[in-house]
Length: 138
Image (cartoon, rainbow, N blue to C red; front, top):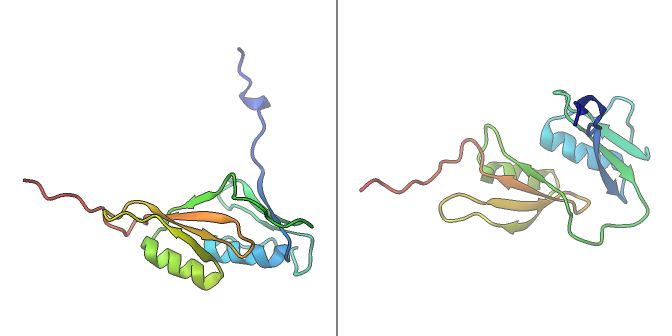
């Protein structure tokens, strides 16, 4: 095979379907991730966009007629920076998320599953301020 790297597609956007206002869902994710909504986006628009300032995929929110009917087949695993997992979960809940399940293990590993205001699940992993509980050497 020859070098086909330049011919392969890139992921431009990760798209979220929503039955509510895409602008409102975009605001939730904007606050959670610290990414601004596009200047052109306004309440009531059929879509809203969050650009990744580091050049990664954008997040695109698009209004659809049909509601979510099953578990996500893809989701975000978020690692907090400058906060513990518990602090990040509390912050997300304050922004409008709801807790789905807590998979935190006694040793501090694991994750907490949340859902955004449209029901899209995402996980919050241990943050960089969480300490790993290691057994004491014998």
